[in-house]
Length: 346
Ligand SMILES: Cc1cc2nc3c(=O)[nH]c(=O)nc-3n(C[C@H](O)[C@H](O)[C@H](O)COP(=O)(O)OP(=O)(O)OC[C@H]3O[C@@H](n4cnc5c(N)ncnc54)[C@H](O)[C@@H]3O)c2cc1C
Ligand code: SF4
Image (cartoon, rainbow, N blue to C red; front, side, top):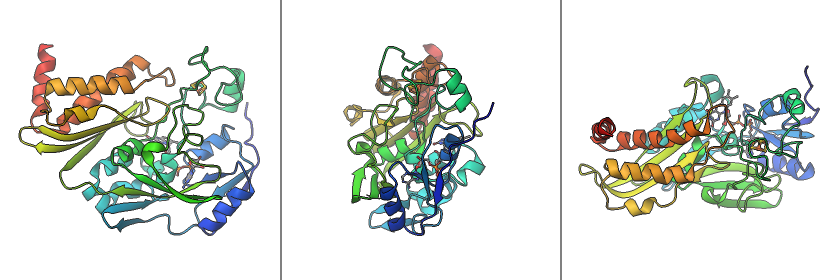
């Protein structure tokens, strides 16, 4: 049985001012960028706005520019452009890496950074057709009253599953926003909330009604920072992450693998992308197999996978340690063989 999507009026503003004025005029309107998530959600009647504001005709949001010691990336820059941009590749390779493994090539050609930052949270009971959801009495996040993942709770555990936000958290990015009530800058670390229903939107720093992301400003790390992104998914050619980890390290002494500072951030394991707290105690320590085991435990305490994907939460939990090991082995010269040896004798 098919259900048509709910009718909506499509607007095509020519500039940011017009877009924001439309958002102010029509509360509940949704912006449309690449449409790789929103169009699917409209079809499934997960999203049911009366007005959709397409950002495609607005100039000036699709550029990457250098601003002093920072890179400003427009919200309409696509994942494909980000992955292949020479300055992003040279100065922020971890961001290029994460963007380059979002979905598959055709989607990356349309999927934008703005849409990636505010991707709706995902759950196997929610990202389904209207028919499927209706047959299962819907769920707490939309149209229903019970959460089948945690039926006795009043919380939504849908997982925030975008790839670039953990990288941007680790890089200390700041969002430039504008909306019917004016413009402001919000550090990404204050942007998300931890309930799958309003991980974006009702958190302290989250998007206010009608707000539009204009740019993401990333301070360029000084030369000695190194970073990688690890992702676990079923099909490497297209799938969302079941778990994702960004790890950045600055060495005091690279040959001795002595850490000056280390940062980790996770995605797809919680209703929001999260920095892993507590990594500052590793400053001055060697990144050896014992340190990697402790980092895995730290990350494991932050990532809380629930039954929101078809993959077992126990598998996703186990993958946290695997991602930490793989990331550390990529970052630290000679660590891989030491980790393998430890695994062999464990
Ligand atoms: C098969 C498939 C696989 C996918 N795999 C991945 C994956 O591996 N990793 C991943 O991260 N994502 C994945 N996605 C999701 C999606 O493609 C990306 O997250 C993409 O970056 C979303 O951007 P978009 O421009 O298409 O957003 P849209 O669909 O246009 O919009 C998404 C949301 O963002 C809002 N929005 C868009 N731009 C702005 C803005 N400038 N300001 C405020 N709000 C805005 C919209 O209103 C909407 O709520 C996948 C999608 C599909 C269909
Ligand atoms: S976690 Fe629960 S409330 Fe949230 S989308 Fe999934 S089933 Fe619905």
